Structure formats: C-alpha cells, structure tokens
Length: 423
Image (cartoon, rainbow, N blue to C red):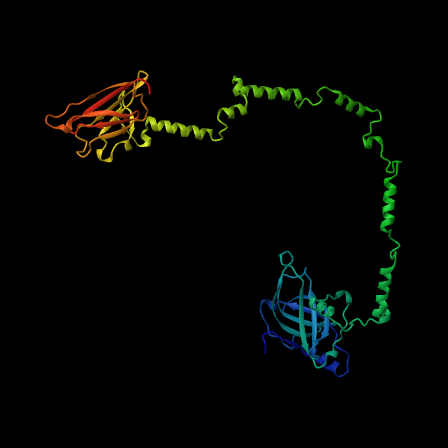
C-alpha cells in the first residue's frame, strides 16, 4: 500500500453501493482536514470522525477524472485567513455529517495569519468508485473558486464549451464581414460623431482671429498699462545718457585701451614703439633668441670656455683659455697661451713647460683666438740654451697676424711674449 491513500468508511461503502444499485446519488457536502493529533494514523473504515479535525469547509468542486470514469475528484479551498496547523489527515462528509471517506494526507503546513506566509491552500481527494455518476455534482456557486489549472484548461478548449450558437453571436460569413470593413474604410466620413481635421482646424482659426477678448481676460490678469506708464518708462530709459551704468561707455573703454597702450610703450623711443619697429630692429628674425645665442657661442669659442673643452691655465691676472686642438697630440699639452687685454691691445704670452716637448717635434704652430696687428707689436723671448746643445735654444715668430710658430727649448722652460697695440 502506498504511503498516502484514501479509503471509504463503512458508511461510505454502503452509500455508494446503494447509489450504484439505483438508489439516491451520494451527496458529498464538506471537506475536512486535521493534524492527526501530532502524528500519522492509518485510516480505518470504522472511523466516524478525524483524529483531530482542524478545519472543515464546503466542497469547491466535484468532477469525474478526465482519464478514468471511476475516479471522482473532490476539491476544497482553505482560505488565507485560516491556518496555523499541519495537515496529516482528511475526510469527506455528506450533508448529514456522516464521514464517507478518510485519507492519510501528505504533510502540508497551513501558515497562520500574521506569519508572513499566509496563502490560500487547495486540498484534493480522489475516490475510486464503481461509477462516477453515483456522486451528486451540485455545488453552491458562491462557494466555488476555480484553480489556475482549471482556468487554463478551460481557456484552451476549442470545442465551444459554452455551446454558443451562431444566432447568439450574430455571426456572418467572412466575405460579408470583409465587405462591411471595406465599406467602412471607403466612406468619406465613417465616424460622423467626430469632427474631421478640416472642421477642427477651421474652429481653431476662427477662434484665433477673434478680436473680442474671447477668454474674458481683464487688465489685472494681463498686466495692462492703460495710462501709458510703461511707454513713458521706456522713453526715459532710451533718453538717458547712461541707462546701463553697470556697463562701461565707449569713451571709458577707449580711455582704458589708451592707458594700456601707453603703459606698454612707456618711454620707448619713437623708432621702437610699435611691434613692427621692434621686429625690424631684430631683423625680422622669428628665432632671434636662438640666433643671438648662436652668435654668442661663436664669440665664446674665440674667448675660450671650459665647457668647450678648452684647457685653462692657472687663475692669474693674465690667464686665458686656448683650444686643445691647437696643440699636437704628442705634446701632452706642454704649452700655456695667455692673451689678456693690455692697454687697448693684448699681451700674447707663450709658455713652454720644461722637458715636455718630444725630441721629434721641431716647431709648434699656435693659432691665436684673435687677429693681431703685426705692424704694431713688440716682443721678447726668454729662456737660454743649454751649453753644447743646439736643440735647446728657443725662438718664436709670427707667421701671420693670427699664427705664431715656436721652436721650443727641449731641455728647459722658455717663454715668449708680445705686446700689440690694437687687434
């Protein structure tokens, strides 16, 4: 036997047997549920009541099962406002209160009102009888509530379940219906109860053209000024010398512009007080700054700079820089050239360090960073020779106005100096 099932009580068996033999049909009136006293109890055909009934209500629907004519389905609805207990047993009663069938029901909880889970609950029992027609299927209409499944099944039926006739719906052939639709669409004014677009527009235009104040607007509503106060105020405003003092006048703007230009020009000479004149003074060179720096770099190359890889003599009043590439690599920098300004000219001094000139070097040409006036200089050479050594006698002379040739003393230090007048 299955875990959950329905049996007819002795009273129920007798009632269905009588109905099957031609007696009165069985009248199932009420559906009852109970909690079984807190546990399950196997149904007994001698029961006359449930173990612990918790709810009883009218039958919602009785029908013969659609696939088995010997099954009678009985349904009831426990409303939302009833609950607070579990269902373990169920029973069917006739209109006299006699228990006809009893069931061992799957555990189902009916939440109490206020639990936050209130709901309507459908309960159902299926009776196996010898003839489904033995049951009276008369239900009070105001007690019936259709299940969603019943509604869906009913809505999906295509067999005219309400037996509606053609006369009831005034049906006609598809061709007749289409003819009516065509005639309606072809009519010039199929809806005379409504105005056409032209009629409506004509009324709007007529209303807009009215000059008789159709909306009865009064002077206060319109903010009218019958005394002409507004016109007078406008005239006063237009006639004022400065009607908008929050804005500057043309004269004030011109004065500020003139002051700004004067501040910009300041005390500049007339030949340099316009942008065009300044541009001309810079040779119209858009890269004037770069050009100036390039020119300065050229002068710096003549004057000497440590950053240009010049060798700088000791910091004395007469020290100056000279290019390293002016000396032969083999000399290991034995020379120091000093060219300080000297009374409007320059003093050129060549100092040859002792013992640093290789034996294979006969003379050294030194290019001066300036051009001297060879006709306006006097000079002297210091440093004696070594007795018996002809290579030790030093000498120096100008090859041209920017080159000195030196025959160094290879054994000792020597120095040559020239003072020029102008360069």
